[in-house]
Length: 450
Ligand SMILES: Nc1ncnc2c1ncn2[C@@H]1O[C@H](COP(=O)(O)OP(=O)(O)O)[C@@H](O)[C@H]1O
Ligand SMILES: [Mg+2]
Image (cartoon, rainbow, N blue to C red; front, side, top):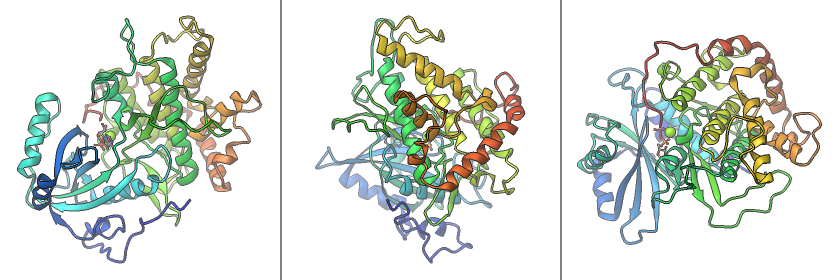
């Protein structure tokens, strides 16, 4: 598999002109276009709907007027320079971080479980009337989400075209699919059946495991808003020794690599600079949001603690344990929304043995991934979580990391990283405890999770 297709920086990169960090990429159009002209063109040919407001972007669906079944999803990201006018705007993305995100999108697009990347271009201009109207309509349905921000004529934007990954998990559990269909309904109003929880969790873990093995990928922001679900139209592949058996037609796609880390085939490391320090300082009265915020601090403790890290490039390190932290967050969220699930490990409410087994197994895996017990973790990566499940399923419960890990991690370097991460695991015990639940106080909520 060639993973770095079309993502090399061209020769046009000019450090004195920061936007060329984007326009020199093979996967980005070289010319900067007018946002106003682009909008006029869209209005003639496309039906545009706003489908989401992210923390850093507006998400639009564009349908061909003459072929409504043909549509793609567009992410419009306002950009800012490292210094100068607008560099402090909290809702805008540094050009260098946008370049890392677009390269990660192009890189991961070839891997199952990651969103398909189609095209990207840079636009310039204030927000045209068409987009302002979409924002006004959006605010009527979403009064908590503020979208009315003034942009100057010189504002630059990155517009990214992707495939439709479906409905994100957070929206799905609150509102169902766009046609109003809910995942699961019972008299008690439970949102997920245990089989659905199982499939969504393992679909996510397998995507991360593939990302780790093929691109040393860490997502670093995998909350429920960044996992999209569709119903499978094709029958699933026959399970083999590398896949965990699924029970439903749900398909998982991991999106939003704004904070992600990955390695290109030429060795270049993509990583967000994590300069938005406020992500480490947020708290919330909502337990799920608060747990998400604590995940950023857990990651920071883990990454800051590696003595091999060069200062300034800490976030370039490959520490796949961060993927486990986010798998913990997702599994906790899923189980909290699962019918009959309770913390009691016997899970007697499940009368069907297969379902009871799934519930007990997931409860056990959840406890093993709790970042509060980092020092006792048996896993070092999402690949470990998946291969241990495959080993367990195969009935060979010998050792935690199965020999099959080599089928996921195909080179010695990854195993060396695992060993380094194992070291970090031992030394990070005290830091992780210090930043754990119940340790925060008086922190300011900087932005709502998306
Ligand atoms: N390819 C996609 N398909 C379907 N929905 C998407 C897609 N990309 C983004 N979304 C929706 O837009 C929301 C915000 O997008 P995201 O890329 O996560 O932006 P942000 O970086 O601002 O969080 C997501 O939670 C999801 O609901
Ligand atoms: Mg997001």
